[in-house]
Image 1 (tube, rainbow, N blue to C red):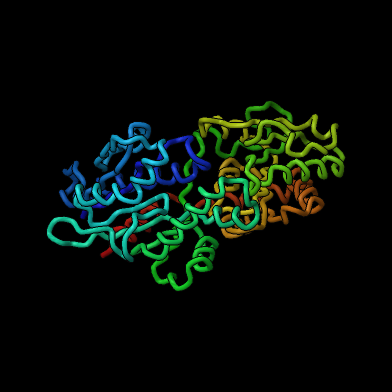
Image 2: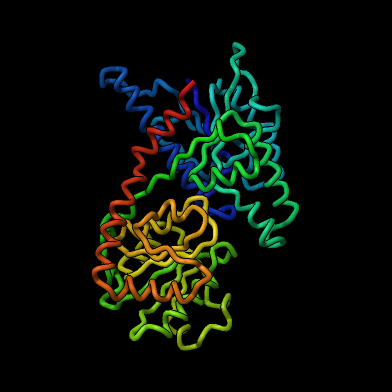
Length: 395
């Protein structure tokens, strides 16, 4: 069987989220490993070529990370940073490549399938129909259209919503990353539940040596709180700073705060000046291990996003042995479960009390750290790969 994965538009650092890029990279790598394993099993341990062929449609920017063992990397010569070419690609050109590489099934990790009637990408040689699967991470463009109109280009956002809705209606199969996202899909496209499979994201390990780092980390003896956010409204950076301000005024010996994802505290200009002096901001880390080193050793991990299709940051905190205080919105209760303290992201008093509890009560800390390690086992890539393989290779 030939599985084609459309990664042509995946460029690290381009677009509004790196999450789709990282998930596509992880799926590609783990499926490639699984294909080689199966080939070796079929050859009695002597094979080195995958029996089930995986073809990755990529570009010159992502070849280094997507051209991996077990896959055939096909570099498309067009420019993935040119919006007009990308529209032409996803509407028309990708179908030609699917036929060229004799696809039996094609996976669209960005959630957009080509135009065409329901359940139809085209036919490969011999007349066999090419089946398609789309991967929906979240429906945040719809969220912005409702709650933050004008933050994104309205014409572009309208196009994205239209393309997502049509793709969800017409795809043969839909994979999504949480039960929350599934319910969101059913709200936008009623009646398509029978073709949706929920596969939670797999956890990528934090760099060696940062697991179970404990308070202090690479920052010496001084304890601190770390928060993950971004300037995008749904990430609630203002709420993070307001919550810290409430905590700072309430705690007897408040810890300092390291905020990853924003340049400074200007999104909350009214912040108490004394509290603001105890806040350090880190706008962007190009490398995952740099971000982890900054977070490792924190005494509490704060994440107050309003909406997430899945939400990796709390799980990354758990991997590093950091007690988590997390928003109770969207998919986050599903991911965090009872391994963190869930809070209303708009209730500053509640968040302040939670931060005091996880930084001052050693029994609570130990219990959350233990539950965090148990919780992340649910998201191993070995189990995720099994589910992806079953979903993509079933007939």
